Image (tube, rainbow, N blue to C red):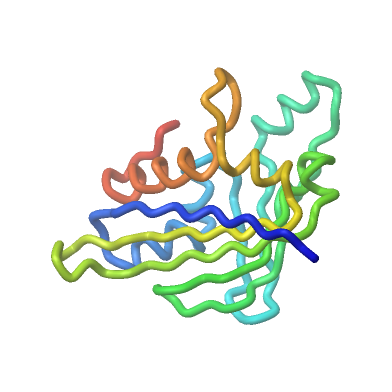
Length: 169
């Protein structure tokens, strides 16, 4: 029997569904927030998802004596309904512990607010079957220097979409 642990993250963004969708799926946008790793999608069932190491990641790996793969995360699109829904498989390939685990399922749902015109709810559902290392990474950590997981990524996405500037810009 497989154990699945699910993380659900919700944020509200003052933007159109189309603008939020672009921040997620368009490489001109998605490399500007979170960990600044550009992602590409083939937005059809069975299409490829790839996320690429940036120069800072490669330099960090070299400095610390390990090799950073070019593709740091990958998966397959299960369903794409722009600008409302993106469901895909997802695996973090940059860490040997997470690369050894099963692919997880990642769903982005964008819903317009009925009570707050011009605002959308972005819900990210991450289903992690038998993936304790990935679960810990995407959950984030308060430790200095550790990654902030989905909370960090989504907070930065919100900042970028609402202000035009991500945390590192």
